[in-house]
Length: 103
Image (cartoon, rainbow, N blue to C red; front, side, top):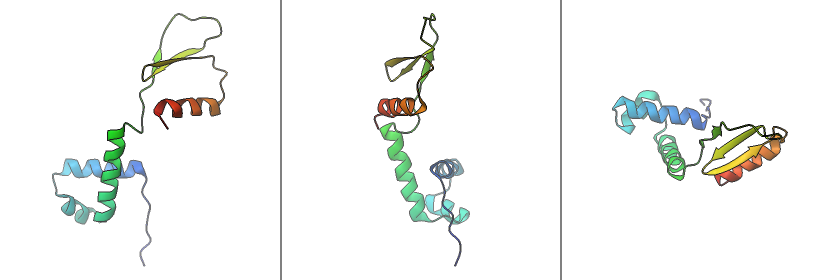
């Protein structure tokens, strides 16, 4: 029995992009690349869903402003501006950005 390899979301995104650039039908591309058409369709739909929902990467803009004592950086994400001292824990920052992404 052949060993199955699991691909990451990023690998599937690259595969889908390769198909779109190839000009081949989905079936033709899957046959040429040795891909399961079922898995291809699944990931094509999953990635399209993610793109439509805006999930995934979120643009974060660092705002350069006049420095004030006790403020290390100001970050703006989706219209919300947060001032950071630079002393925040990684856990707190993770929770904050997940909340901003709507997770």
